[in-house]
Each structure stands twice: as structure tokens, then as C-alpha cells.
Amino acid sequence: MKKVLVLYYSQSGQMKKMVDSVIAPLKMSEVIEVDYRKIKPVQKYPYPWPFYPFFDAFPEAIYMHGCEVEPLEDVEDDYDLIILGYTIWFLSPSIPVTGFMQSEQAKQLFKDKPVVTLIACRDMWVMAQEKMKKLLSDVGATLIDNVVLTDQGGSLYAFLTTPRWLLTGKKDPFLGLPAAGVSEEDLANSVRFGERLAEALQNDEEKQKKPLLKNMGAATVNGKLVATEKIATRSFMIWGKLIQAAGKPGAFSRKIVITIYAVFLATLVLTIVPLNILIRKLIYPWRKEAIEKSVKFYEEPSGR
Ligand SMILES: Cc1cc2nc3c(=O)[nH]c(=O)nc-3n(C[C@H](O)[C@H](O)[C@H](O)COP(=O)(O)O)c2cc1C
Image 1 (cartoon, rainbow, N blue to C red):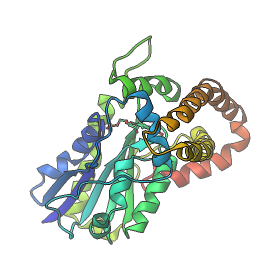
Image 2: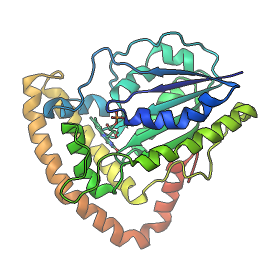
Image 3: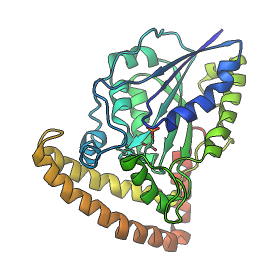
């Protein structure tokens, strides 16, 4: 009998849907036992998000100050594989998942275990996955695969549809824009990763701690977005420090800096980001080789 631990954190249920789709074949297998647990922050985060709490979460997310999480109950320490479904908050793993990965329990559970990460996010996950790699190596785990689903409609639309969804709970198409979030088709199709994992577990392939999901379209990096993510991370670090210096989470003094930051971010998203995308498109032929190299790196371990 193989034992798989599945962990996830999801607010709207989208991340859970992806996890459920991937693990369906594992649950159907007679030789695989699945322990399925939700990561629960002690203090819940709101969904949909009111404006200030949304931006108030930003410094703690970017600086990886995870929150306190409830200990997982009835888990063992001899899993053959761990599957971790996490979302991205401000180019970092969400605060509850970071909090869990920094806990003593994560150290016990993850030590020497092969791990598959699943991500469902808007479309900027590359820097967050680098942070996740560090969290996993800190607890002695080996990342063997990474599967990523991103919001439908492309980067520019998602800059509008995703914040509208997160701040109002509305996902439906509006003003001619597509619905927010990952498409139902992509969520359903991710069952193929579970089919392959079930087969691999039956053949003891996970023991080699090598990728099992290569050439299956697991993770596709948009090369033109990598530079944007790097620039945004630098700017986030500066603003994160300023907001933290203004007071503790929830403090009124923080709201003032958050307001200035929100205006800055909106200006950035409406001006610099499209300009940056356009410039990156124009200079692509000269940067092609370097971009392709970085794309290959960030698509590891599963690759396209
Ligand atoms: C506070 C916050 C910040 C987010 N920042 C990012 C981000 O930097 N990049 C990204 O691709 N998605 C970002 N998202 C979208 C999430 O990764 C995810 O798609 C969305 O929250 C739905 O996940 P759920 O399953 O928890 O409902 C953010 C969401 C929240 C709530």
C-alpha cells in the first residue's frame, strides 16, 4: 500500500478543485491511500477581500512572515509522496502555506519526502515557486514536480478580472472580458497528472525522487513575464518595508501608506506594465536566447 499526503489551502475553492481533479485517480486506486488535509490559519483570512485587508497582507506575504496555522490532525510521518496545492499571494506562497511550511510539523512530515507542488493562480508564480523551493529544502524535502494552472484570458485581462473577483467574489464575464480564474476545462484536464502519478506510485517510481510529469504540459513559463516579476519583487520589497514601518497589520497608520501604495500600483498596472510588456515584445529577438534559458530553468523540474 502506498501512502500519499495531500495538503492545500484555498479560499474560493479553486485551488481545491485543481487538487481534487489531480488526486481523483489516486483515490480510485486500490493500492494508494490518500490522507487529505486543508491547511487552516488560526486567524482566518477574508474572502472576498475588503480593500484594506487585501493590501495589508502584502508586506507579510512578500517577506514570508507566515501566520500561525492549526496543527494537522491524524497525519503520519511515513508518506511515500506529498502533494501540496498552494496559491500565490503577491509573488509569494500564500501566508497560510508559508506559515505551515515554517512549522515544526512540516519539518517532521516533509523530511526526505518527494513532493509535487500544484499551483492555481492569476499568472505570476515563478518567483513564488523559487521561494517554495527554499521552504521545501529547509524542511529536507525533494521537489520532484510542479504543475501550474493560470487564469484564463491572458495577463492583461487577468489584471482586471482577478482583482475584481478577489475583492467582490464576482467571477462572471464583464465588459466583454472573460470570466475570472482558471478555466473549468484546465481544471478538469489536470486529472491527467493524477493518472500518471497513480501509475508511477504503483511502479515504485517515486522512490527515485525524479520528475514523473515531464512532457505533459505541467508548467509553462511566460518568458516575457519573468522580468516583470523580478522588477515587481524589487518594488514590493521596498513598499513592504515602508508599510511595515508604518505600523502593525490592521493599524490605521498602515492604511495611509497602503492608500499611497494602491494608487502607485494601479498607475503601474495601467502604464508601466503594458509598456514593459510592449518593450519586452519589441526587444525579444535580441534577448531570445537568454529568455529561453531562464524559461527552461523556471519550468524545471517537470518542464513543458
Ligand atoms: C492577497 C492575494 C494576492 C495575490 N497575488 C497574486 C500574485 O502575485 N500572482 C498571481 O498569479 N496570483 C495572485 N493572486 C491570485 C491567487 O494566487 C489565486 O489565484 C486566487 O486567490 C484564488 O485562489 P483560491 O483557490 O484560494 O480561491 C493573489 C490572491 C490574493 C488573495
